[in-house]
Length: 249
Image (cartoon, rainbow, N blue to C red; front, top):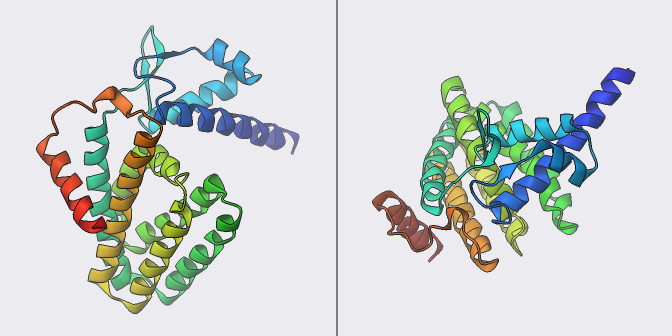
C-alpha cells in the first residue's frame, strides 16, 4: 500500500512538471532546440529527477520533446503548418470514428457517451480547462472505441497523442469551454440518432475549430511554434485553412 502511495505521489509530481513544460513549449516560452536539463528542472520544480525524467518521456511520446543521444532532451521544432496538417488528419480520423460509432455503438455505449458529456458540464462553471480536458479526452476516446474498429482506434489515439497538448491549450481561450461542450452535445445527439453523416461532419468541424482556436490563441500571445509565420503556406496547410474558414464563416 505504501509503495502504491509513493508511485501515485511521484506520478502527480510528474504530471505537474509535464503540464507546466507543455504549456511553456506550446506558447513558445521554451523555444525549439532548447535543452531541457534534468538537474536544472528538478531544482526549478523542487522535485527529484525521477518525476522530471518521467515528464520528459511523456512529452517525448507526444512529440513536444526529442530525446537525442549524448544531448538529452530538447524542445522539438513543430511548425505551424505541420500542426495544421496534423489537425487535418486528426479531423478525418475522428470523423470516421464518429460515423462508425453512429452505426455500431450499442445502446449501453450510447448512454455511456451521453453520461461522459454530462460529466463535462461542471467544469464549465469553474472555467477549469484542465479538468474539462481530462473528461473531454474520455469523451473522445469513447467515440474511438465505439467505432468497433481496433486498428482505427489505435491510429486515432496515436495522432491524438501528438496533438493533445495543442488541443488542451486551445481550451484556455475565452468562451471555448462552453462552445466545445455545446459541440459535443450535437455529436452525442447525432450518434444516438444513428445519423452517421451528421455525426461525422460535426466531429470533423469540432476538430477543425479546435485547430483554428489554437492558432488564434497563439497569435493573441504573439508566438507561433517553429517561428514559421512568414514562411510560404504549403498546399495542404493552405487547403486546411480555407476549409476551416469556410466552416467558421
